[in-house]
Image 1 (tube, rainbow, N blue to C red):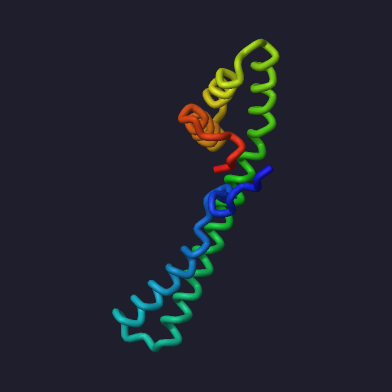
Image 2: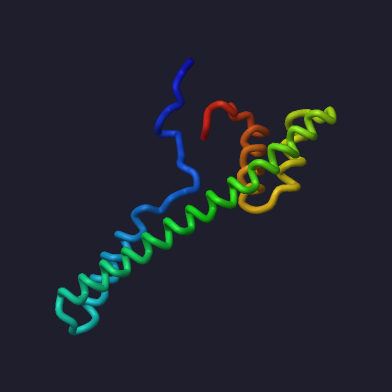
Length: 125
């Protein structure tokens, strides 16, 4: 069995790990160039901004993971019930995606769309 290509594997949820660093550099550069504050103040504001942006990004990612985990059991139960009732797999996936809420709905709709386009489900993209 072939291992999935590491270049294809993506993390869930999408992470923006460099947003804090980019914001820190941008804020420090703007404060340094626009104001007459000394360089240590510009660097301090940049570091503070970068830290806050990083903490907010971590919080949003954790919240999305928590919502998905809470909805996953319900989605699996609904799909199993649909399959036991005699639905086809694609039909059960579509029903589950329609009945799920955000963010589970987005992930299921993306998966159903990829399968319809002929992508291999075991590929992991």
